[in-house]
Length: 77
Image (cartoon, rainbow, N blue to C red; front, top):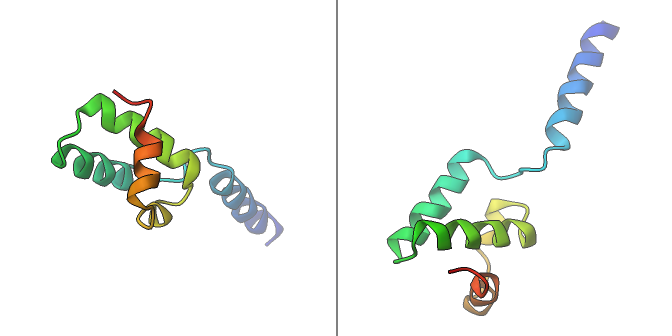
């Protein structure tokens, strides 16, 4: 029983300490949406990285204003 609890705690800690909270599907959705709006792959990748720094949860990024999006993409080309 103690062994199982230890494994569960280890898995929980490993997932909770992830530096990459967005799933690969969420990243793909974000990039596809950006490119469909006319952004280049490089621009969209930069914009996504900047967005991820401000919005660690993908769901929260959906609430960003147009002005915030412009700010987050200013250094992207």
